[in-house]
Image 1 (tube, rainbow, N blue to C red):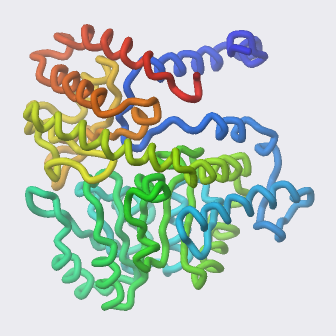
Image 2: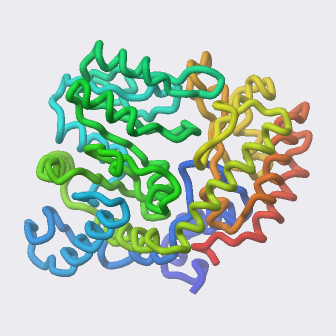
Length: 419
């Protein structure tokens, strides 16, 4: 049954029309937002199921309400699959999203006022890694390390110096816009030297780690690893905390009852489905293609004269310095590209002189395009469109022409959830 023929359309046509319009937007545009993806169709089935109807406060075998036998089965499956896929001693699959996921770790393993060493926001870190605008930045004391040099390296000697000076209780590495792989072993050695815990926030990389194409912090001795379930993992919007067994009780108590009430069991079921998908050879092939597509997009942009932070990419994303490359802000570049059917986001660059809502860069990523079946030739074509739109003398010069090309191009690669 189409949405136009549904009970929802008859009862609430305004909402139904908005959904229909969003389906058309997804079909007709090229999504290059690094943190977005198209979930598995099977995950949508769990999200629209009766599992959304019931409270399941607690953990399997220890629930507050009766009638939990099927919810216990689902959560146990999700936990075991997470442990297997990520080679973890313990897994908590209940966090409602990425921010509370990280907050649960902080409150579970630290005390308010403790020091955390984390990546600076403008150099690739995340709001929950100690931004002053985040509540976590007010509750805990964050010390921030930065990247340096044309290649965007993390100067591990500088990180060690900060660690020795500030003696953090937790050393956190992870990012939302850093195009290079992280040397987890080097961070682990620094943490061991000062007796600190280690945490890897791999929310962007979770699927690529599950698929075996990027390094796993847990394999290198980290205490905790967090990841969202969407992005590269292609699950529902939720979070996972993977940790050593010694931290299991503290983490579980921090999630519930410390931070949240009943888990969203339709989401937990979707996470279980996504994790089963992640264990397949097909998913590894997908992850390999995500990386290949990112390299192809980055290389072509560089060939066309664009300046990329770190000079390229070693994962699924890249950051283009559009102020240097095209003499415009990230906000203007985002607007221009969206008018041409190419969706991305403005992005601060290291020590950006502009405010985040203007920014000097844009962030591009390949997970969503890869999910639709696009490969290296399509990424090179996308780079040419991006460069053409951003080099045009005005916003409307080439946007309409490119918009038609992008629409026809995108329609040839169906969105899996709409196919």
